[in-house]
Image (cartoon, rainbow, N blue to C red; front, side, top):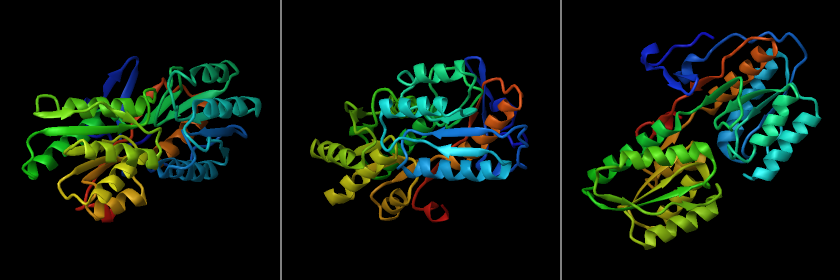
Length: 316
């Protein structure tokens, strides 16, 4: 695959037995991949609602059309392990050749994915892996991105002259690997500071629940709140908006029109924008290559993040 490597190949790092190679979103242009058969690919994301998954789906569909393969979007309506497992089982029963999946829980869905693998189905992860060997993974280095979010939080607070205080975290749940790693990176960035991170609260990705959690944090007197995904970030921004305070700092994760509006209006400092279009495009290409018999070696590709703030949000 032709792609420009960020900071050259010296930035590649080993993750277990798999290479993690960061790529630039604008450097993923590639001619369509020729399929050696009439392949059927199932795309199963955590849910079918978040803009992140919609963008990933649209990019995957575009690539599948260019490569002349069938791609069906089979995501559940909400983030739910049982519903995602049902989608995986349906893909196996439906005779799909490959499954592109963003695991809602790396443990919960692994049994269903292992059954798919045992049935000869190729597995490619997009965004969030499970505990089953896959042909390839295309995802954000979530810990690194979470650390950037933490650094942005500290910088924004210090610019307001706030050198100490409590900070809340709104996460999805305790089992989604991607957001767990984001939180870990965020916490790492605040180590050695005088800020106190409160106990994490969970919203299951629901913006309304996240807003209630964030409002409770605000009542407790926090100086900042981190939302670990689109729903958590939307709820955080809405809570800060409702509070009427211009001192609170909200930092989010993911990109949507709503989040961009909250940044423009000053209710979120910034958000870590992933590249779901890259995940979708490269995921389809990897499925086809694996089905064609090419060995991808379980490579993990970091699809990167961009910090969206007031200065650049209009460009996105």
